Length: 261
Ligand SMILES: O=C(O)C(=O)[C@@H](O)CO
Ligand SMILES: [Mg+2]
Image (cartoon, rainbow, N blue to C red; front, top):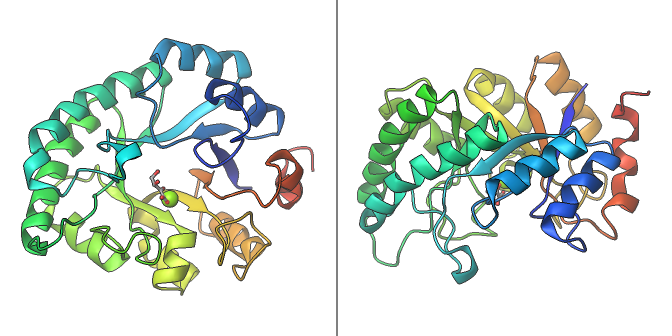
């Protein structure tokens, strides 16, 4: 049975951040994930997780100035020092929150930049981060993001992710396979997942079009969830979608997978 994590950067937007953790637990999620914990006191988050009895599944490495539109700094040549300092911060938070996995957002390609320079910066940064995170018992993933929502994001296909991983000589680097992004970019979701299943460290879900909850678009999530079970995926399934109405009211899609069933 899939284990669902509530992505608090998308769900429960009507609640203050820390209150989202308790609500996610009340709604039956086993874990939470979100873009960034760094704006909050890590002990406050840890206490909220403990009080709610819910796990931390994932968050991102420090990803630059999110409010200003930055979406990661992994590939940016002028931000290497900042990236590398961020690894220590991410390890500090991941240890405090008992978070098993962190995602490295590649970043938006600056206008006129050389894709090869961005690629080698990304590779060198990942080669720096992966072993340090491994030493701390934390897995590292990279996520291809679709070019419709983020036209200049530096990583948008599994093929590119595979090329990057082939050049980073660490086995502590896998793919964050977001079914929504991959439906837009490539389709062929389960054959691709099956081919890469040993190189996938986390998955996320949303339907397409609209990035709303499962059952609102073209993706057959009952088929996807059965395939994840068949293929032995034991990680968290991050629910990173925009609720069509209220988060709790829109969780009917999860009913067949609740433990009490
Ligand atoms: O946009 C997505 O999809 C993501 O998973 C990133 O925002 C990383 O959190
Ligand atoms: Mg995602």
